[in-house]
Image (cartoon, rainbow, N blue to C red):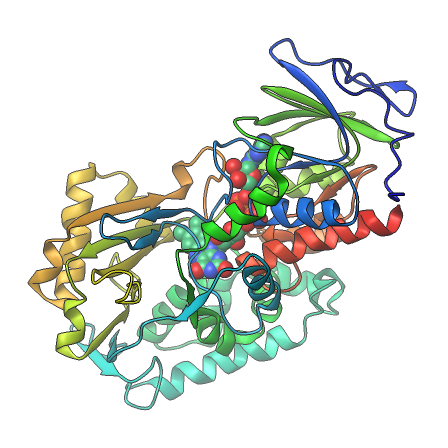
Amino acid sequence: MSKFSRRQVIGGAGSAVLVGGASVAKAAPNTTSSLAADVCIVGAGFAGLAAAWRLKQAGASVVVLEARGQVGGRSWTVATKDGGWVDWGGQWVGSSQERFYALIREMGCETYPSPNFGKTLQRSIYDASTYHRVDEDLNDQFPGSEVLKSIYRKLDDIADTVDVNAPWAHPQGRLLDSVTFAEWLRQNVEHEGARQFIATEVGSVPCASPAEISMLHLAWLIKACHGIGELFGAAQDDRLIGGTQPVARRVAEKLKDEIKFDAPVRRIQWNQKGAVVQSDSVAVTARRVVVAVPPSLAGAIEYAPSLPVNRTQVTQRWPQGIVIKVSMVYSAPFWRDDGLNGTSYDHISVMGETADSSNPPEYSKAGILTGFVYTDHARAVSLLPAEERKRLLLAEVARRFGPKALEPVSYHESNWTEAQWTRGCFTGFLTPGATTLFGSAVRDPVGPIHWAGTETSTDWPSFIDGAIRSGEREAEAIRKAG
Ligand SMILES: Cc1cc2nc3c(=O)[nH]c(=O)nc-3n(C[C@H](O)[C@H](O)[C@H](O)COP(=O)(O)OP(=O)(O)OC[C@H]3O[C@@H](n4cnc5c(N)ncnc54)[C@H](O)[C@@H]3O)c2cc1C
């Protein structure tokens, strides 16, 4: 018999009123149905899906409530007309992201090496009008690479001092958490070009401006992602045949009707024995809840009774970053004819980075370039009319790869900050002071409520791998608790 006895969860279809004998909720007036389960999971991104699937495998009954009409959250793959695909959200997997690789295999999906045919373009830190062609970023062909590498080493050294499970316990935690990355750069990097370069590159992980993130949180992020070398290197080694979202869709197939779509959760009424989770379309009575949504969205749910102050406060200091991902599909990867691999890094212009995101030729002959518009640039271009923004961004790509870049067959901007159920990406980051002020409130369960989502992972946070790990972590905690 399952360890997940339903004895304590009283309710079920039609009632949704009793948990452990205490009346905790009535279905909201517009809630059309009520369900009961051992565990209710909020959000069907990779974190929520991983939690639900592992719990189901362990014999628990689950209901997943998802606000959107699809699974995958920040992973969203779209088919192209010629049989290929484009990832509008997460696309790469690599390095020691073992939990994502394991799920890919388990779901019968496959990876392929990220295309890399030719040289990378890197804007000079000494002469801003020049792009250098290098074999890989920051190798010796790039003037100033030694300066930049020594700054990376300094950052890695700080990161090495952080305990990923308890960054707040760092002996100099309060100091490091009160120094912004901007201030650290001013104190440690004399050369302006180098400073801008590092700010853009390192800031691209949380998609935070240097003034809004602390050294402690940044160092934690670097450490939890295995250091700068892996973070900017091997983590991008592979792509998914068919894209990343199909992995999520296959997990969803295993969960079948246990996922309820178009069911944004508005309210969680709880006591020590369980909760009633109310969405727009269904209310679920459950013994445990896993909230697997970005932290600021977790904070937007109403909790009754309200959560402990540290938990309530921490989600108010955990905003989503901002980056616009631009997908440009061309009839062929023309940049390869010029000996370029499609990767470019630019610490000055509006387009901070590009990458060749083409599919293997047996699936599609198209050339796909992906561009990233980070933080302050993303905020600025968001204010422009769509046509003007497109002209500006394509002109920027053409400056690097030639006039063919001006005429994509298709063009799409994913501005996740405008997505109601995400509100920014790649990830949420803690603002200065928050790590040391609120400590373990980032993950500590509250009564029957557990917190998942990539932001809560201590291994590869901000990545799909971190999302999966966070869901599996909470599933295991619930399984162990019985
Ligand atoms: C443009 C972009 C590029 C990226 N590139 C990469 C990459 O190359 N490699 C990589 O590993 N990662 C990448 N990432 C990050 C990666 O996609 C995320 O870390 C990961 O998908 C997060 O998963 P999650 O389950 O934690 O959260 P999410 O994917 O955000 O899932 C949360 C789910 O909860 C739902 N939800 C929200 N609020 C509610 C509510 N109140 N009620 C019910 N449901 C709700 C949402 O609709 C969503 O489906 C990228 C992200 C973006 C946006």
